Image 1 (tube, rainbow, N blue to C red):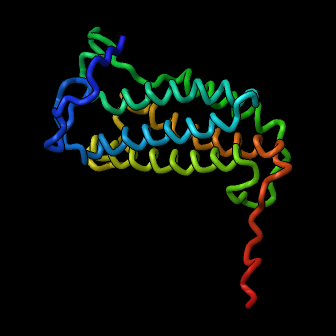
Image 2 (image 1 turned 180 degrees about the vertical axis):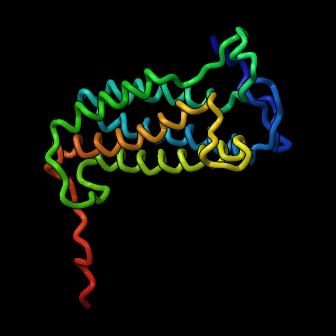
Length: 203
């Protein structure tokens, strides 16, 4: 249980912050940048939720996803410890079941959409526009997480520490979900705004 009895502590006034394990890092540390981007994504989804109230299944899914993103932020904010694999207290990590659920929801929404023959421009309904914005923030959060995890893996972007692997997969799948959800919120794609390559090159 999280208990917040005091909002300001002055502990971060010097530009440092503490991770879940109590270790201290700079607020500009790549790890902090990564989970900070996830926090921004969550706030953006809060705006999107305001536009999809009563629009099921999106409202229910976004509520769950916002909770998942707190899990994901905790995941990124918790350095790996070998104790996790040696019977020690388990860290709060994103698990494969959370990724699989996103995949099922993507498939269910996509089954109701016509196939695309062009890229979609962000727009249409207000709900779709917010979902597209959330998608772009999600992609940035993913890039920040990849950059951080590459450092954790010794500078190799393909060497993602196993402890954070599902978190990275979740972000990748979530951007796909948000794209499909935006189309679904546009009257199942009927209000999609399509890109016309080179449409306005003539003077």
